[in-house]
Image (cartoon, rainbow, N blue to C red; front, side, top):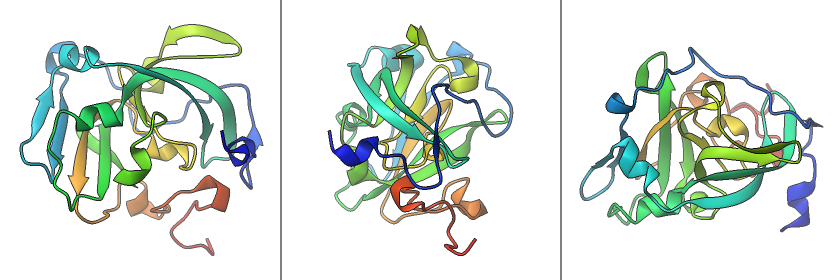
Length: 203
């Protein structure tokens, strides 16, 4: 592991807790209505039921989380479906270089989104997580407030707002496009080690 990954990013403080912050109402999971969509710059759109999603191979990895509200939590272990596993199900067009990861917001399955470059999400540290543990907690399902049944956890090179709760799909894009918070003035790139919090560096 790169030693830099264990450095506290500028403007952050370390916490052992996993604080809960989210936009809008907490999603109430209904398995019969749940659907995960792979779409955009692909040869054919794919829709997965909850059971189909849960049958996909699982990955376990330990990541650090850095929230733009200034807390950082190191060494949380997650179990989930790596984004690269989902790429095996769909033929992505060669010119697709970016994605938006969507999630529920106030009962809208595509109300929340976060944009990222696809190349940065090809490792085991880009997971749609269902379970977690840390030094103080044994394995447990993520709670509704943390994004149950699936929440995207991005690599530590992104602030945590890129981690869409109540995940519903991935849009593959030819060009970068602002997600929910990016449309409201937050950074498109969101690197915590460069303290890329807002689109205007003078904010």
